[in-house]
Image 1: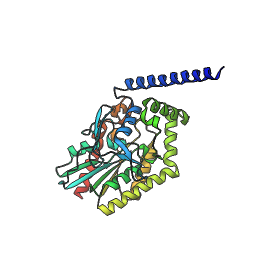
Image 2: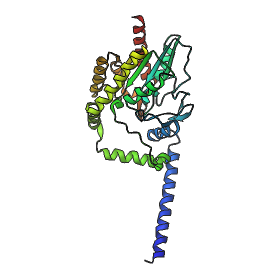
Image 3: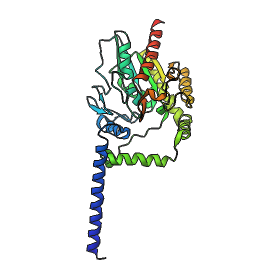
Image 4: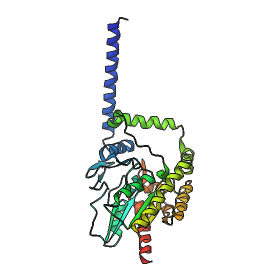
Length: 319
């Protein structure tokens, strides 16, 4: 084949690949316009509402004063980088909700997440703020609150310890393609799932056991609780730890080791502890999901958890 013909063939092939990718990107974007694809909505969340933190131990944070419609729910970030309204600095007490996407209230309105329900149920004089940021482990979440508390001090801190609390999160800037292409974001998620080599319920249990029982996982948990203890002392704050169960099947539960670890750590540092699992058992687990495709907690689940938190706050206030 002549050099010129070879160059033409390569050029036409490259052009074909380019248009195929362009069409694929268009198809993915059209198919996900309903905002029901979890992977794409999390991709949009990272792109539209997050930025790199100046503290590498936190990793990422919300962009202040920005909002987006994600998974058909409005998420508005205030000037302090927290979801929800501006803090009420005239309040007598402030409750801070700390954690990852569960604390954020992914998939539910601000009125139905834990912050919103606590605001509605606590007496006058209580302000409730939400420092939850998605895709954080518990140490990152606690450090996030640690960075905010001088500007928005709280005398009650409610920390949600979720299944990903002990995950080793590496925050790095994604490639240009992943950052700007929904098609490549989906492809990378699929490739990562294939590379894990483990599927099904048994693999899920084993994966979490490995994560929670690893030296790194235990260190992450211990670091977070040590910081919480310091905050309790320095701020004269009441710390309430809430263990959020793994939400695939609450009635045949195989993840008790997570709650046990969180309870032991709370006891070690003298912090209050709430286990909502017994109060969530009974109904079909999916009744507490945001949707059939997303196991994040819905408003019904937060209603139960908020009742437990309000009862604990009232109990401590009466002492």
